[in-house]
Structure formats: structure tokens, C-alpha cells
Length: 189
Image (cartoon, rainbow, N blue to C red; front, top):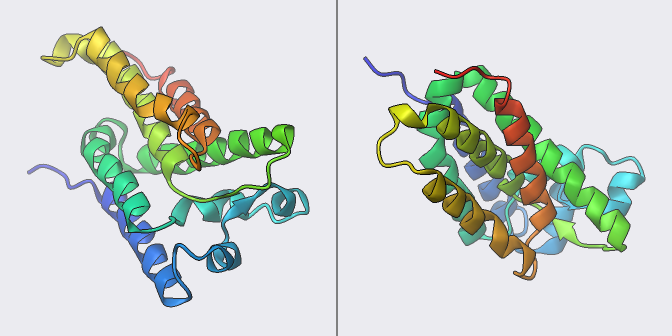
């Protein structure tokens, strides 16, 4: 009997619960509500509100934002959780999200940005980074996966963040790089 990806489902459920709480308390597209509930903003984090690095990973600006991240989490989660196990998968998600938040924070401080950010994208990109490494290492066992296809898919996912307004490309990049580093020590199979 095949194991269900319980960590994937649990993380998705937590994101949906947080979204509905936001909607009930003022709306997920209302900046005041999002700030009250833990969205990230450089000045507040620098003043000691470090929890925002974590809480912002579970908040989303509108249903489309949530749905996009959850579709990718679902698409990658089953296979990746099967390869890593639920504990390492959950660690990759949370630590990758934190790495994304930290690189996004660094960029906001360096550029003087006062942007408000939220979303699971850094965590989702950590999954993608780990998935790329594992696919490269195990591609002889995976039919239809060429190096070109792997890198094309990763590039398609990463590049729009650098030219789309309101998208924290540095959070994406931070998560992606963390995912690569997380998966590198794992042996070939």
C-alpha cells in the first residue's frame, strides 16, 4: 500500500486555514489585515518582529496567489515527500521558506524597499530546487526527463519573478538555492 503524502497535505491544510482566517478577519488582500496577521516588512523585522519571517510563509494575497502556490506544492509534494520522507520534506519546506524570507529581507534592506510580502513561494521554490537536484542524480531512473527539460522548467518558474511587479524574486531565489543545498548531500540512487 502506497503511503499518502501526509506532510504535503498538512502543509496545504495549514495554508488554507490561514487563508480563511485572513478572509474572516478583514480579507487576504487587505494590507492592514495581512500586517496584523504577520506579513513580512523589512523595518518591522529589523525592529525585532522576527516571527514575520515564518508567519509570512503561510499568508497569501488573494485566492489566486494561494492556489498557485498550493498547486505547485501538490504537484511536487507527493514525489518529493516520497523521496525525502515526511520529516525531511517538512524541514525542507519550512527552512527553505525561511531562507527565501531572509534573502527577500536582505534585498529589501539593500534596496531601501518598504514592501509588504507574504506567500509560500520561497518554500515552494525550495522544493523545486531539491527536486531539480534529485532528478539530476536519478535521471537514469526517470523516463522522459532530460537535462534541458529540467533546467527549462526551473528557469520558467524562476525568471518571471525578476520582471513581474509585486513578486519577491529574491524570496524565490533564496528558497530555490536552499533547496539545492539541502538536496546536494543526498546520495545517488
